Length: 312
Image (cartoon, rainbow, N blue to C red; front, side, top):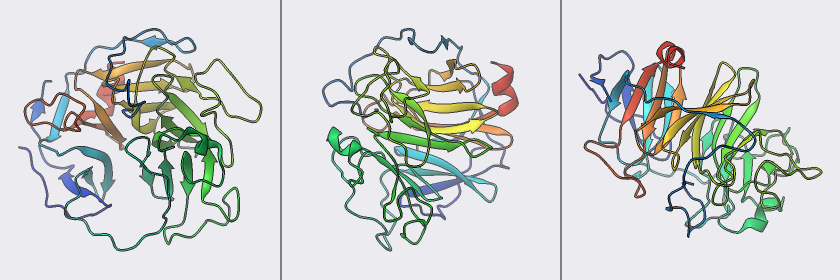
C-alpha cells in the first residue's frame, strides 16, 4: 500500500515524506539549453571521448509516491525519504542569506547541498561565468549563517569554482572528491571534477577535445550531437549516477573505465537521484512543462542496489 506522510520539513519548497519501512505497491514498469534548441529532438550517437553502452529498461521498480507536482530533489532524514516540489506554496521565507545572484528565465542552476554549496547559472549571459566578481556561473560555498567560510579560495568571496554555464547536480565520493553535472550549450553537456578555486571552461571551450591553460576540462562530455541535460546526481562504488532530463534516462558513469551507459530508461524526464545503504531512488519530471505526463505522474521510484548492480 502506498502511503504519503504529512509534509513536516521545509527546504524552501514543499516536501512530502515517504516512510522507508512501509510496504509499497510494485510497479512493472538543460533541460535549459539555449532557448531556440532546447526542445528539439537529439538523436543518440557515440561520444567521441567515452564509450556509451546501451541498457534495457529496469522492471523491478517500486513506486513510492505518485501525483507529485514538478518534483525537484530527493533527500533522507531519520529513515524517511523527502521529495521537494517546485510550486512551494506553503513555505515561508525567514531570512535572506545571499542576494544579487544573476537570474533570468534560463540557466540559473539552483542546486543546494548542506555544506553549504550552491550552484548558479550564467543567466544566459555567458561572460559572467569567467568573472570572479559575479555570483553567476559559479559553484558557491557559504556557512549556514550566510557568512563566507574561512577556507574558501578567496577570503572575501563566496566563489568556490567558476566558469560554469548551468551546473545542475553535485555529489561527493566516499573519499570527499567533489563532482558536478552541467548543461552545455545545445549539447556538450559535462560531468566535472570540482576543485576549490579552479576555473572551468565555459564559455571559452565547448566539448572535451580542447584544452586551455589554467582551465579544468570535463571528465565526460555528451559530445556535439547528443544531449543529456544532466540534473541531480549521486555517487556509489566509484560510479556517478546522473538524472538526465532531455536524455530521459538515469546515466551511470564509471570513474575507473571512463565508460558510461543508460541504466534506467522509459520513464520520461528524470530530475534527481538518491542512494542510501540499500536502495536507489529517482523521480520523474514529466509535469515540468517540457515532458509528456502520463497517468498519476510525477512519481518517486525505488530499486534495490543489489538488483541495480545485478542487472548491469
